[in-house]
Image 1 (cartoon, helix red, strand yellow):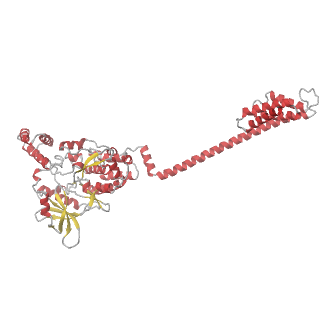
Image 2 (cartoon, rainbow, N blue to C red):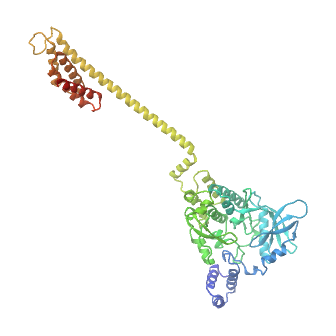
Image 3 (cartoon, one colour):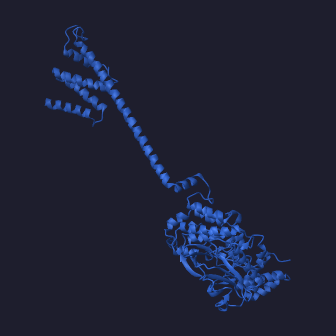
Length: 565
């Protein structure tokens, strides 16, 4: 019975802690008669020594017997200048885990066309590798999409190595393209959404790419994304399943650690959500310039722990830090800062942080959830959320509260909302003006009514006084003698003093003025001053100091005082 993977992993990790001199003794003691355990551990140790840039098992079990003694220069010299099928090889343009890619041209004079020819590397043409390579060829034959590099031809070289002839894509890795052209966040999202559509097309044909990374996503000079290298893709179609290798501990699972999903690292069954995770990392890097995990140059077991357990920082937080990272295939170290990141995105650090905060944080972190079931169920769903973000619609990765939906509505319809706001303000202003005018009208009507009532009271009083000018009407207190003007004025003054107009001070003030002027006409200076003084007092009590009536009253009073002097 084969040893369990947990046992193999424990022994392998412990063996790494022993020096080469004591490792043999350790394996003899731990493995004993378990030959299968010994074989698996020794295979992993050999892979660790010769392929440090890969994740060792279970993420990648790079079998030791696949490591050859041929140098890359030897391979290039052996292939360059050769003709493969109808194509003449020109130069090497790339390398992968299984093969070398060459620029080639059509050599049978049928038509001029440059292509990319991928040939299994010499020494790698084992039965398993050839099987996988043919698998890639079959996969590409089923994928026809404008953003996926097309398969044009295929066959076997004279020495028995399979090859593919693919559309030659002259382009730049997506992250480098975006930075070089200083694309904004929204422009990067539109490119990424197109990439998602290509991956979704592959998923609809039951193919999981399993190695999505910037170097496998090229952008042509006209800005068209092209998805490359389905070399480690897994076919889910039962009709093609025989072409794909079974997932065993000794399977060659070459992948890129920086973009691998937790289940890929653990060697578990993969679904389309594994590509969702890898795309999440690509998007994280496109928008922030950083990667979710800060230290991937660690031993295999620690690297697996980081990917499977460490939670990534929010993108809006990641852009605020200064970090030294290894960039590209050259492994050159570069320092990235908030200023350098925002500059390549044509913005400022604070603006970029605000733009990433919220929806984009949630979209990316949902794609990077450790549990596959908690991620987006498909790449199409992730692309849909990005489109909704671009259209200022609520995204599925965020809680759908009323406040959030209202905020999105305002952003989406800001012109209409602003116009409606102007209309509302205009209506409110009109209503306020109308109410104020109505109030003024009521005040004026009330004042007019008051003036009318005052005039009526004055007229009634004067009419009553004037009746004493009738010889038949005697003024009280005159014992029936002839009535004089003096008698009428005295009677009027007496009535004012009795409080008849106590509740009508304005009427009384006017009457005091009339009586004062009448006494003045009669030459009764003392009585005139008495009633004029009362008139002045009443006007001051009824009106503000700056009102015309008390000012006029004061002027009259001052004039009398000056005259007396």
